[in-house]
Length: 312
Length: 250
Image (tube, rainbow over all chains, first blue to last red; front, side):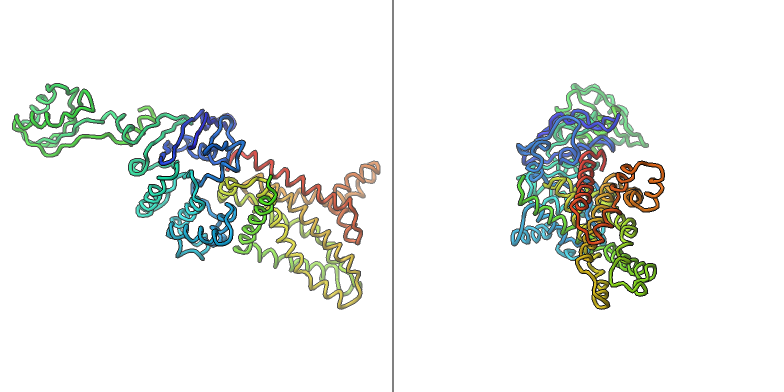
């Protein structure tokens, strides 16, 4: 388990991270979200022991990153932002170095490096210099470095940044695959990623945790969660709006778009968890209005994110 | 602390540094320039052949001045480059101590300069062929030269940790090395001795690399000279570690 306890970091007068606490259990993929400059990277740097915190500490699987730093660091795999790798070495040589410094030697080392190269689809560039590789490959080399020693805890700072959609997909698959036995914390800007990968998400803004929830839970915070979006056709559309609004359990109905004889309505129920879809359908078809499209909005993470981080 | 790990970690870091040196043109450029410059100064400025002496004085006397520029050029990338590339973040989150890393990097660079120095061996062969030099003196001079390079290197490594700009690191290191040389440079001590008391002149010149190098290069291996070099190196490497541990940015 990774236990972040009251982590605070002050740079001069600027409070970059302000009393952040959370935990990440094994089997969990924790998405770490926040606008640029919110303190994501600083927090990750403190978790991995790169920066000493101004106050607070982090416990990595029982080892304190400050007082038992080496023991704690042995359990961590870290992919820093922008995936830095030494440019003037070959991929194989670099991973050899990582394996050796992590305590592997002889055949165990060779096996580790071979396995990792295979796993990250890097076998083909083993003998190539890192500075001749494309951004996607460099990212994978750095990723390979972080999983080489099969760490119990993975800290990934924007692991899919700068990758093409296929590579993003691959990295996400790898993260999901590894999550069964590890606790993974990764930061990202891409909210779809949170949905497809994370089991839990933490949003930070101005150095504070402003939300800690499952992706579904976050979505439920959207003002649009549970609302029904209905597109109707025909002259009687105006009547439909009134008819729906009069139904029991409906809080309000608003017109999203009106284009000739097509009207799109958004229907807000009193309780977002109680479905009103069938009653809406019944009312509309009773009035003889044609239904073009209809869906129940789950709420979009983008909206929730914006709302939480900017207060709008 | 576990001693086995300490040495093992230093060794692994040294190996990686070496792979980095020889994986880029830096190593080759440095060695070639060092050999060309030593050759030029020895043969054309010191008139090695015309001097008619079977010794390497004309070769070693230039080392402080050459090293003053060349060693900071090797040292400037030690930390500034890691910071610029961001690889420092990986290096310092590995399960190794700052001491392991600082020493590993320093020793790798020092060995590298040692290799460049060793490659001047044809000069020794030449002197042996031409005359009957005192090989003990030559060995001492090499040792002194190597220690001086290490001293300049420790200064350069420390200034490199201060900044992510290699140029700034280079200039700071050159100025510091220049000071270490000039404190014992004859014209400077002459100016000082005109008005300052003798003990002050001695004190200033004893902080100089030059006076310690001169006595070793004569073949006099004095413990005080060795202590001088080692203490400057240990101090600079210690400061280097402190700077890294207290850095507030990547």
